[in-house]
Amino acid sequence: MLKLYNTLTRTVEEFHPLNPPQVRMYVCGPTVYDFAHIGNFRTFLFSDLLRRYIKYSGYEIRHVMNITDVDDKIIQRSVEQGLSLRDFTDRYLEHFFKDFDDLGAERPEEVLRATDHIPEMVELIGRLAEKGHTYEANGSTYFRIATFPQYGRLSKVNLEGNVAGASERVDADEYTKEDARDFVLWKAAREGEPSWSTRLGDGRPGWHIECSAMSMKALGESFDLHLGGIDLVFPHHENEIAQSEGASGAPFVRYWVHAEFLMVNGEKMSKSKGNFYTYRDLIEKGYQPRAIRYLLLSAPHHKQLNFTLEGLQGAESTIARLNDFRRRLAELVPGAGGSSDEVTRLVKEAVGRFETAMDDDLNTAEALGAIHDFVRETNTLLAQGGMGEDDQQRLLHTVERFDQVFNIFGPVEQELLDSEIQTLIDERQEARKSRNFARSDEIRDLLAAKGIILEDTRDGVRWRRK
Ligand SMILES: [Zn+2]
Image 1 (cartoon, protein in one colour):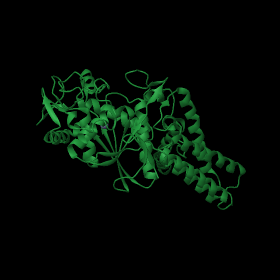
Image 2: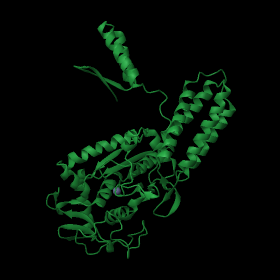
Image 3: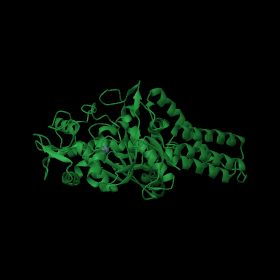
Image 4: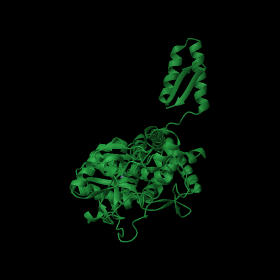
């Protein structure tokens, strides 16, 4: 039975979805104005881990993520670069998903862009207006917090004191509000900025309304899980609750789950502090995506994780060991032995420990410990020699099950080296010259099976990896 710490109740709770076997999960996605740093990816990899473990546990997942593709920083940078909002955000969205895929994360079932859902946001603001939760000032529309007494239930924020300026994303003085605690739903158009003509007037949506509108559109008014970084608890998620429940009158989300910060030298990794690494910085330094994934998943999401290059170096050797283990096990030529009690016990114990750890609010440190012990004990068995095919297959299947959740073992097949690819291409050219088409087709198919795409150009054959 999976248990998760729910920020809303401040307790670890058993996870019971509203409509099993379906689980509906919403994750606050990136604001696409720059390369995401690995602190951002900690949250997305945690979401990936939870989604995978939910599937492992026998549920069906419906995972939705938004893309914030309009906000002050995006507008400012797109203007600086002379690009339309769409062209500018398309570029960073593409970079984001390239990194996301490379880090071994599964794509959500739906990815929704804010600027594709302006009508839904306007409609939601209309419903809030009908229920008396909004007011207008200077062409902007605000949520009146005084009309929603439950405000503060998620964040337990002290409303009398520290709201204004508590987050960089509270619009403090830019707009005319009746009360500093109120937040903007619709921002009046300003000169030189992109805007939409709607029945609320010319303008653009506030940040918070996009998540309420898109999550309820995709998942319904009440759904199971809402995830994000811990810095989103206030005001973003608090405001989402006010907007969604204010409009629908129904409980918005059952389980709010938040990922802690990634730290560097005791400080939160952030763009504004300048103490961050992007995924690409680390790849340029020669680190592998799988090592970054391993490191970011190695501490449970509810604990802060201190990032160091030494730690990443350690993750590199760990994933190399795991990959080597999987390949040796797969390539083993089995002996004559049948299934042994030893392997039955080993698999049962390892899987049991793994599941107990993951059920315990995704205790990844413990789960990885179970995996490492399994690898060590299997190595001892392999060293004894004579393992039968049935044991080999059961052990390989256990690796696959762990990897369904963590995706850290890496492929069994070795990737071809660049030099090996070039040798094959040269051989294929020779075969074509001597009209040995059977051989040239064979090489083409072999390369295709390894994900190598060939392109005939005027300057000869060029290749790339898929
Ligand atoms: Zn959000």
